[in-house]
Image 1 (cartoon, rainbow, N blue to C red):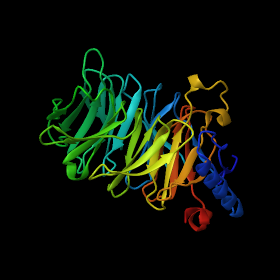
Image 2: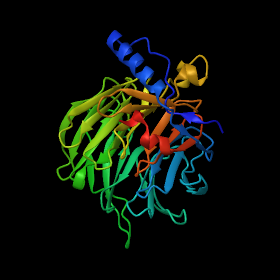
Image 3: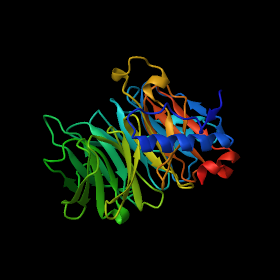
Image 4: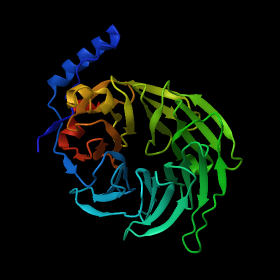
Amino acid sequence: MAEEKVAETNDQPTTHTTTTVNNFTKRLAELKKNAPVKMQPLMLKGHEGPITKIKYNREGDLLFSCARKDKKPCVWFTDNGERLGNFIGHEGAVWDMDVDFTSTRLLTASADRTCKLWDVSNGKELFSFGHASSVRSCAFAQGGKMILTVQENNFNAPAAIFIYNVDSEGEQSAEPVREMSSPETGRITCAMWGNLNHHIISSDATGAIRKWNVETEEEEEKVQAHTKEIRHMQFSQDRTMFITASIDRTAKLFDTKTLKCLKTYKSDRPLNSAAISPLMNQVIVGGGQDALNVTMTSSKVGHFEVDFMHMVYMDFMGSVKGHFGPVNTVAFSPDGTHYASGSEDGYVRLHHFDKNYYTSNHNL
């Protein structure tokens, strides 16, 4: 397989201001003086359709993936890219997934109006939580004793966040213990548990971020974070910050406690996903023009690279090419030694950083 270069740069965007272009050109000249960071990707092909989500477990030795067409989430070994198995039972596209702290249970959200709980060790379905419409997002609470699910709005059901207790010993109940919704939210795209499970943070198609009180089921705070739909949110490793990715061509870093915007990372294309490195002062973003808006399906036209940016200074640091469709999901491993990306092309690309990555001036 061809070697990948993090120091590869995109074509210069024509929409940036003169100052931004000058800074970009200066940074590009600096990057050319350094030896490029080279990575040999592992190409994981286990899905028949576009990848919708990838998720590392806590140890980083397993990577879970799901797709839009084949309805069968996969689990892979991250050291060699070997597929461990599938989780078979959904009848629709799988939009989201989460794995618990001990890597014993998997949660999947699907367009078949269910959220399923699985045994990771054998792929057995443990329980199915029924909903009135497609389930767009799901997550385990800290401690693993509760889960949240996000129901999509349609003619038959409103957009809502549900909370369920998870019973690992007795009979599992299909009835939610909490329900949070508002007529102003529209379609909820993502939801995450806040620290100590006191709050839930959600994003929606209007570009807003909302903080919900789990005890009172009330919306406590709203921030208009983006001008267009937020496609993805992801915490930093210590959960003090989280990053959002939007089709308004920006990714933003927020303080978890105050919802204050700390940094804004600008791109030349719509963004579908973003992640924060637990090891370096870096964030990665992925996206690209939708296939319907691209006249030619080449990666150069669609901008299907994964971009690296400095977390503090917001400088563009480089990009990794390889996908030939929009990048839908990206994630760093918990120890920051590798990252993965999933694309509309149906591939998961797993990149292990070599020793130059840790010593290069790129990361200063």
